[in-house]
Image (cartoon, rainbow, N blue to C red):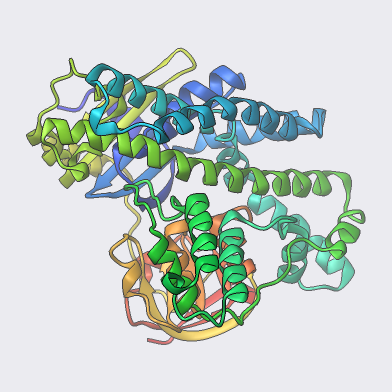
Length: 482
């Protein structure tokens, strides 16, 4: 039987984001939001629900938490426009210890590490992982609460200027700096330009050195919340040799954006300036998270190796359970890996965790509100990147879906993350259920110059593979032709 407190929890209002993940590598999202934010910021989240089906997660944010955090972020920014920069500065100081720890682990042979030290270093890694988000988890509160208001304000401003809303919104919100994904791509492009006449890196010492330096800098770039993977020098070499580099996306933030920003009323300008600062912070934290996943997952997998448990099962063990004294069996992890729910309720003093499997999982699922499908021929979202496209749908919800993406198809997903970039490059257009102007899909689609509509809420529910659709990103509209 499910306790009454969890029944009440299920009936609350939730905002859901879906992506590939496993409990161990995303648990920092809970501890940072509920304990970290409340301790370091004085405000934060109080409850969360993680619903797993295999390694696909529906991450439930409590709507009241999001609104409260969003209001607090804006209130603090209006008191001090340097508020976000100061928080990022504190993060930078915290990261020094994390970088020292990463350097130490790089110099160790984990297979030879003593058991006590291995467990201790795992918990240190999880602590650093949590710290990464303990301030910046406020981003979700602001973005998910105020993106709609920002769009409405820009729409009114566009009407006064006689401009198109989507074009003005892009001009005002295009990041002034390249994302780390764009920087990595630029690094490979520079290698290509410098060595374009070389047939193979194996035959050229200069290219080999450049690729080795690139690999050392970006070996982690395909890590996800579902697991880590070290990208080899050979894989980067193949990418240099097999990629077409002609296409250039729009440049980062322009002078025009600054000129238009000055014409806005004070409240709208503050919202946009805050949003733009958070976009930069979001990209910075994502990079550090993906790097830290390498260390956390490496330590976890070595513990699993000694226990005789495969990595894909170890990742369903919660960080607090990674303890020699805890008796978490392989059969328990196998059950979780099929389907499980993790609930969290707490504050800055601590968090109560419940893991539901089997009949409890099924009962809790029934209590969560389910959105029914209906017959729809056209729907809309927010324009993230302008353009128009006609093509067949490819639904990419899991990591296994991404390699199925073909050139010229319409990428449809709940929300994009770095692991979706290979599919995004092939897409004629991108459509997402979730996300706002600070989302990964919005930032990367602009850099790539690909039409993109975000925040439709229903794209993955009403569309299916091979549906023929027309995307009119300028208007945020998607028409289903079938």
